[in-house]
Length: 417
Image (cartoon, rainbow, N blue to C red; front, side, top):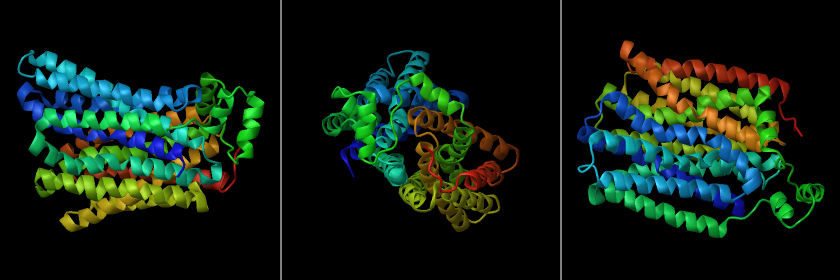
């Protein structure tokens, strides 16, 4: 792996790691602040909201600011963590409503670290040709996505020994260390490096293509997003990513409730079933999804993965046995992870001249699934039962599979320049 991939993956892993803390914070401070269900839900969701929608502008900025964009995002995320630490220290001093409002504000700021995904995708893309994008981006996103699963396992032990405030302090120290390492090891992509050396745009592009890299940053941020949004293929990828990565975020939130509500699994065991069995499998299999997409095409791999997701969703719907539900969870994890790798293999393929815009749009809007799917599942579960709630995934998996068929039929293994 080159330094661009290593440093980009490190930044994403570090920024995404903080996700694991927010849900636990709500469990701890909710009773103290006497929060109702809606207030608690906003406290959990707010970092995901900013983490999703800030992906678009920060991804665009990579074309201008290069490697420094990810450093800026991590620093802003660190400021949010420090603000949360300060607020938690004052939880018995300030009025409850003020504490709640401060946690919302600083949680939103901390969520900036989550937005490193799309900017990281854009950054890493500029180091590789289209033929190797799947593998490179699969490694980047797969290893980066392991953060919530790993820290979900670590967190209960940290809370037991350090307590909530000192767990946040430990997290802030970890993030500070990662920021320093990132700044030391990160480098500019070749095209941007040539531009900084004073070469003309034409010469920089020629030298970059001579290196075998055919994904070039755009000169105009406005044009990049305009090109991406006006492309129907990008909209299909956005919905497909809504299903796969948005679905990944949604089930990370939903599965602990499912295990506890249907099978009465204790919280710690439910966390392990979610963090290890589901989240880590989904993250690690993404690497294979990207590699396989390089070999046989992202369109075909995405079709196979969404059919796999559909199968897992149906097993969940008709399962009332604990072991069968674990099987369904594993099948869903495999399908989602491979789909995530396949979809982002296709982003630079379909938008080679607007990677920053397409990456930000697909990653930002697509990740909204993590916000919209859990309430939909909760509503269905309240009206029927926990198993029927997975009908949401049956529907969106089928639609995504149809979109994959359309892309496979029209584009297949064709390269787009």
